[in-house]
Image 1 (spheres, rainbow, N blue to C red):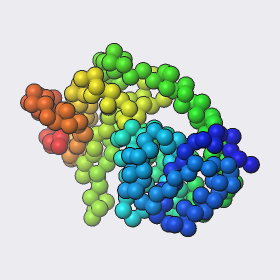
Image 2 (image 1 turned 90 degrees about the horizontal axis):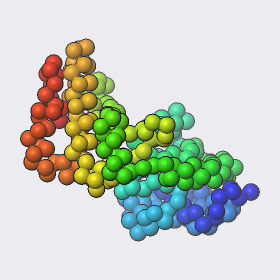
Image 3 (image 1 turned 90 degrees about the vertical axis):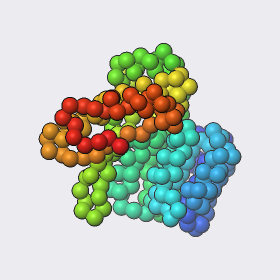
Amino acid sequence: MPASVPSTTRILVVDDDEFQRDVIGAQLAGLGWTDVLFASSGTQALGVFADQGSGIGLLISDLSMPDMDGLVLMRHLVEQQFSAPIVLLSGMHDEILTSAATLAEAHGMDILGVLSKPCSAQALAGVLDRLKDHADFGTRKARTEDLSPARLAQALSQNAFVPWYQPKVDIRTGQAIGVEALARWTPAGGPPISPGRFIPALEAAGLVDDLFFAIARQAASDLAHWQRKGLQLKMAINLSMNTAHNWTCRTNWQKSCRTPGCSRPIW
């Protein structure tokens, strides 16, 4: 039985295996989904997105692909403000698939569900059935997601933007040698807001330098704390091109990151 979502939803299926693309396409057609696009690689998917943009209402992507894996693809899409839900598809162990979904959500991606390959039409329909409630949730979220300059300035003043740390591991030893500080924002009483949405809004409001300093101060404090505990780590902090080209910001950057007790650099 077709999933109870308007069939006008455009779906992009990304998988490097032609047979798998054909199978998923046939299953979607059997479930009543007729507007389906296909890409054989992450690079091709980015090209499709460049042409279709917001017209894509759902992404179904393989996790393991040769030129660009599914997570890297989704990260590129989020940076381009892609906000539609995503279904992860993979032949890997369920634990790996679930971990990948958790990591994707931590990066602000909207994960609708995960499916193990080969997936049945019934399993696919079960995930697609969630789209109706998901769409209703997205509508409510859009109403409450305030990205006005005043709201962003308030969030900055309340230290609502916080760093989440992604470890950098030496593959030869398996030891953590550093972390990358990623800006995250979860408004009180609401769902997390994707960096793909709040960072462009901060840039438009002229507040992106304030975000960098807010994250840098918290990150430097955390780094000093870890080092006092004996963890000798380096730290990287993402910054926008606007901030990188701001000479005043670059002059003040080192002052912001000089925290007593912090012996190793932030880079």
